[in-house]
Length: 184
Image 1 (spheres, rainbow, N blue to C red):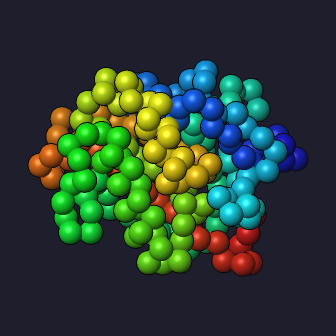
Image 2: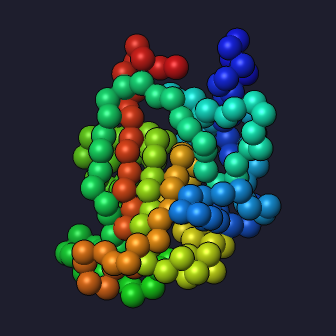
């Protein structure tokens, strides 16, 4: 905990059986998802340059963070859907589309030298809330396969439609790539 008792550094979140459980348009804790540990590591075991914000009296969330503090170059991505580099949807199904959307996020981030460890926010737009809830285990597996064990603040929102016909999920991302002098 920091001296002002408002920021707690939480580092590694280790997944268990599934990843995300949304409620009221936000991701909320689920008993079998993730547990925090002592050091925040990227998939390649290097310390992350930002801090997870956890109010001291709040229950720790599982599968996401309440907030994050970061310094550096900001990278804003458009919503990514589950299509390949040729603009074809990889599947009509939620999990394959989500996996591909996450891969697309990493591909765009790589254009600026960033990776999953730099993501500080994800917003998921889904067409079917119940389908999303029912797929929490496979979605968690797909998430960890692509993004590793990095769980930034996330929101999930059910929407009535997406712009691309056949798309069932769209994911927006924001990343912060630290300057050497701005590491927290």
